[in-house]
Amino acid sequence: MTDDHNLNECLFCRIAAGTVPSHAVYSDGELYAFLDIHPIRPGHVQIVPREHHPCFDALPLPLAGRIVALGQRLSVCLKAIYGVPRVGFLFTGGDIPHAHAHVVPLVSKTDISSRRYIIEEDLTFRDTPRVPDAELRETAYGIRSALTRGETI
Ligand SMILES: [Zn+2]
Image (cartoon, rainbow, N blue to C red; front, side):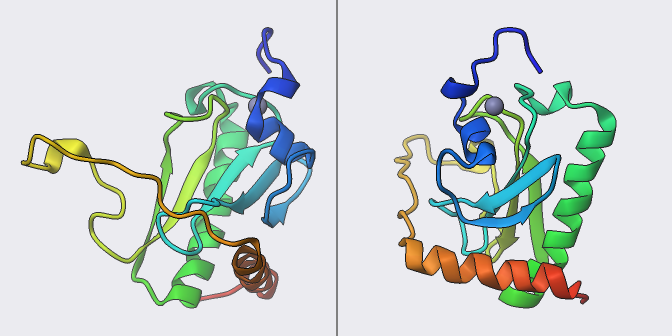
């Protein structure tokens, strides 16, 4: 945990602590995984450690390993639920300075990409739509159920 950390100012600390509502798909003493409310694709999950670390390179290796292991389990479930051949897993940290991993069912090759691959100079970006809570509840239930069953390919 960082010295200058203020739990009240970190959105992901508040989500992991349950003071900001979210749609959980997994929870234990160290990790919390929940649905992105502006998903790249349905089933887009974010995994956060409960302990605040500003970026992934600050994570103790065993904790980073647990995040990757949960990402692998989620990937198997998301492939089964969405019928996609691949699931992307990435640590970014460009938005919220609390280490987090995105787990995204890859429907299109460009679902996770880079501006550097795009030839056009002028691009316009937008947020993906906010998914209604009723739909997120249903999605989270499906993923939790698959995790509980120990979904296999
Ligand atoms: Zn935090």
